[in-house]
Length: 407
Image (cartoon, rainbow, N blue to C red; front, side):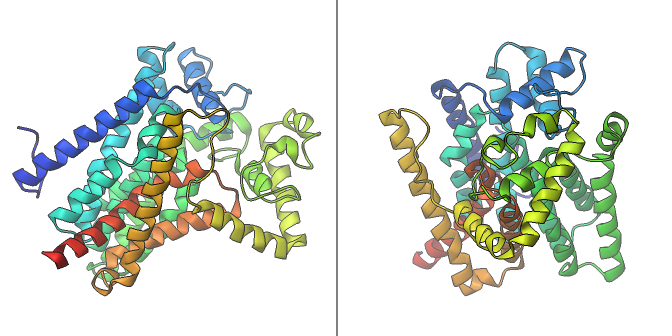
């Protein structure tokens, strides 16, 4: 018999394990059938892990020491390449295991927002078989780890909302500490913590203590990396891509989506700027982006709204190059899944009994804050994947409500 989850009946635990195993198989099938060679950011993460194992330290393929977030290459890719540095299979299997872990956390989040057995299992099923969740395990992308950490941070925040104590605060802080090293955009979800504590059942003094504990743990985890960067670069920072990302999203050539730095006004001088150091380059681009925003407030506002539309635009786009019939079919199914999830999740706003649940509001706050931060930078469709499981949980609540009414 499979391990029984705490506080869950044996029958429900058995069903959840079956869903999780099916989700894992689904991801392994994607690994076996979807051909992909690492590119762009994947090359950076791969080189960071391989250089570390080769004794050269954490440095990417362009010589940067802290341009990219360190957590994914350090804790996922490096152990995978330690097993086999010449193949990507182990790394992709690790990604699949991370995704499978997310299935369990979706179930747990649904439970924290007051869902019954049907809603909890539907939440797990929706995330287990969401197509991009399977396809992206093939990529050496930080979102594979980031998604699980986002789910963890939301789960522990809901635990705090429901009156849990120090263990939940430590778990919450640990997830945010991991996110600080994995994907800075997800730190926007920190707003969920004080809101959860404010509406928590705990007394006022206890809320403050729990909030401080979350903060201490969240700061302690990335502290060694910040100290390393202080020693290596002379500046205590998490990474050096902030200014770059802000400029790419806010310059005269910005479109709302990612554009190559070579297609911006800084394209011709970019290589010479990089030679002066990654900290200098990031700071220069940050200042130019802020200057453009100040000089073009209306364009900035319009571009931000355009990014909002792009961020939640259904995936009707075509992939690069020639597409096979199988890829066309997968993209069509992805679009159907995405639209169905968004429509179903929106029902939590329209259905009064669901709207009144505090946990539902917390999920929407997490989704909204994560969306808002991308309105400041730029959009790549992959960037929304870490919060799609939250959409799945909301959709599951609506499905459970409708099923219960019919029963």
